[in-house]
Length: 262
Length: 69
Image 1 (tube, rainbow over the protein chains, first blue to last red):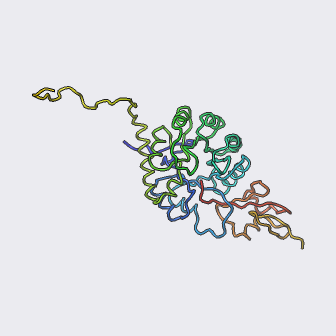
Image 2 (cartoon, rainbow over the protein chains, first blue to last red):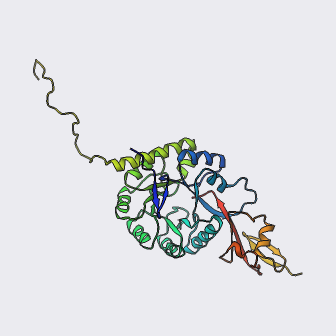
Image 3 (spheres, chains in turn purple, green):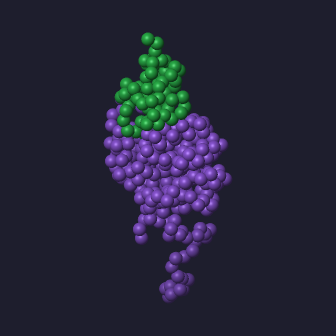
């Protein structure tokens, strides 16, 4: 069976269900290896003031790896900031695809649903393909879809926490109701977390720090690639129902009988 | 000659009158792919850099892609 690696967002096929974030990555050489090992075809970038001392080009590394840069609005606290950042990103990178992120505060980095929805509406009207980073609230996810977002990206846990999927029930509710792809974004700590997200029926996973801050980022990138594929296959294969008691897998008929009885 | 006082990426700067965004970008060594400019919270399309003149107290943001997210 093929691993079903292709994900479709806004009618476009992406040859990997793993979207790689570059947060926490401080070496372009390592990034190049990580992209190759993860198989990611979409790689997020933030927009920041130009750095005259920057050596090497992040965009060249991403494009040179056969991946497409996906700009985001990381660090924006208001709809207005996010909308301007999005427009700058579209102009700078020549893509209307956007990971929309509007956070509420620096302690939790949780999405601000009010500002997020407002920015999403403006940007969809402005022709962007909006992929919003959102909380695991099915109601907000539904609202984001209804204003025209091309996917919804609920968090598994706060950004950088590595706590995994804290509310699998909500993620399942979002998967069940959504007609756009659901991409679990944030909270992944290790490979099993990514597999869990995929087993819940998510179309993809977006992760950054679990790879970039792992002790061996390239090895973790390999692990994540396999975990996403394994989780997807398990979801498609259909797991057995959970049972409270054991259920013998071997029939009891035709067992031996001891001559001495008992 | 009276200069025009602007703020570029948070730093004060005085430029000659009639300086355009394009001239500023050349001064910054930032005329390259992957860079975008906003003046006073409005995107200035690259095609308009040449005819957009900086005015006193303009706030200019020059951004490019960086690791993140």
